[in-house]
Length: 407
Ligand SMILES: Cc1cc2nc3c(=O)[nH]c(=O)nc-3n(C[C@H](O)[C@H](O)[C@H](O)COP(=O)(O)OP(=O)(O)OC[C@H]3O[C@@H](n4cnc5c(N)ncnc54)[C@H](O)[C@@H]3O)c2cc1C
Image 1: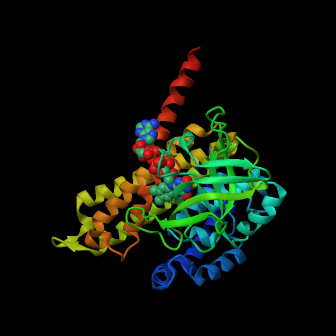
Image 2: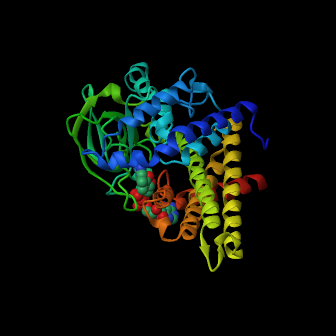
Image 3: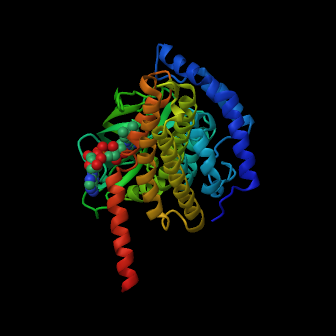
């Protein structure tokens, strides 16, 4: 593995950092004020559109889409995208500016990989252009959704249509006014083999029978203007052509989207943690307690050192995972993807928490990004599979591998 980025990656890093310095950090507070001052908290402020146009002009657009989807994306490898995604992760609202935010990225990959020509024209193209947003609805309040085979939403074929009934929650993005399409996971055949019962289908937000019931908070945050919705599906009748790939393929599609989705979360969280460390380093130099800057205290220096070590460990593991995905494919890289999904969110929680401690009361306030960032990092220990599920699968795979080696 090469421990340095290529010249073209370095140039993109410099360009993205310059964009963040000029357009993102100076607008952070203004953006949140605009969201909260608006009569409609689910309407994305116009500032976002202005910045998206600037990002497009700077060719900092759809950076997440790998080479196989050219000409749509930038054609970067996971390893090339990693440092860019990390930089975007430093500010929680910035990924959207570059059309690189979840769950749109996963949905675009799904549509690019599994969508037919009609689905691509209707949904993928406007998503790639950043004209609309999308959501992925799998989790249900009534069943333990970390085991996706539990999902109960029914998708029943009736003539040329499918009829959908069920209740979802924590459908990220579905509160936003610009969210037009959902990828919904449900069961087409509950009597089939365990992993062939599920299918995925496209459902428009404004389709008759779809009710966005309420916004769900996450650690007290509603995450406006994007949000996480509870969504009710009551006899939602959509054309059979809305089904992705075919009946029984839902699990396969879900697995396919989670590899890149998981590593992107980890990259962003490394950015969050790095920013928390940078902020801590600045704060402890300015703040005088007991006659000297906090930075002169040995325990503070140890904490800073420990934060740095944790971030570097997670970053190197994430880059190795990205490299494995590029070289051997997501399936072969599944163990190391599980490893980073276990390591990075926990690391980010610890590092951000430590930075809050060094900031004192201010760290818990609305005057820094730290508390919202901690809440976000904490939720990623659950989203796209809780830690324990990844540990269960990683542990199982490693024991099995060793047994195969000995056989
Ligand atoms: C902010 C946020 C955004 C989200 N966005 C989306 C979204 O856009 N779309 C979507 O579909 N879902 C989304 N989710 C939901 C998320 O994917 C689920 O919460 C997650 O899959 C866990 O499902 P569950 O909540 O039903 O927990 P449960 O399945 O009830 O599990 C509860 C706990 O049980 C433990 N557990 C589970 N299995 C095991 C095991 N094998 N061994 C030991 N312990 C175990 C884990 O600690 C787990 O956290 C989001 C969640 C949050 C918080």
